[in-house]
Structures are given as structure tokens and as C-alpha cells.
Image (tube, rainbow, N blue to C red):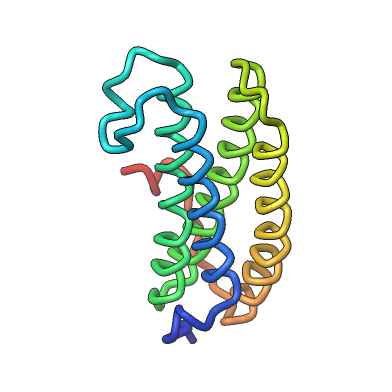
Length: 145
């Protein structure tokens, strides 16, 4: 049975915290301080910051999507997509590090938030599988269409 109160769901709270830290880091490292126009920048650092914000925002949205769905297939698609976004965020952090961000403590703070979120995510994903078994199968490419 899907969860009805997202605000009290621990993984959702952690996803929002991860989102906040990601936005703060992106604001700090970007050359363009207008977060809404990062994608228009010529700077690789700004593009990485924009991608970081985008993926961080998508995580709580995918949790909400999974929690409000009656379909086990949709829940598992969302969980898979979240896993991909977590890996992307780690890649963005590495990209920022290689692109010359000297304030490693900020990058490490986001890495720490990701590790904490991951623990909550794994518990949540495991609990979702207990909602019920299904014979439905899906392909990740189905999710993209």
C-alpha cells in the first residue's frame, strides 16, 4: 500500500535535505549566480551545477511518484531512476573537483549527504518490495518513453 504522508517519510525528508545541500553547493561553485540560467552559460562548471540541481530535485519527485503509485512496476522504475541520479550526483561532484573547485570540504559535505541518503534509500527500496509481489516486468527504456 502506498504511503500517504510524504512529509513524515524518512527517505523523503533526506531527499529534501540532499536537494537543499545540492542547491547550496551549486550556488557556491557556479560562476553564474542566477540559478535559473545556468544551462545557458558557457562554463562547464555552471553546466555541472545545473545538472546537480536538476538531478537532486528529481529525487524527491521520484519518491513521491513511487509512494503515490499503486503499481509495483512504477515504484521499481522510480527506485531505479533514483539510483541513477545518485550515481550522477557523485559524478558531478567528481567533475567539480577535477574542474578546480578548491573547497573540498563542501564537496565532501555533499558526498556525506549522499551516503546518508543512500542508507535511507536502501531501506525504503527494500520496504517497497514488501508492498506486494508482481509478475510485471519492465525495461528501463520503457521508462524513458
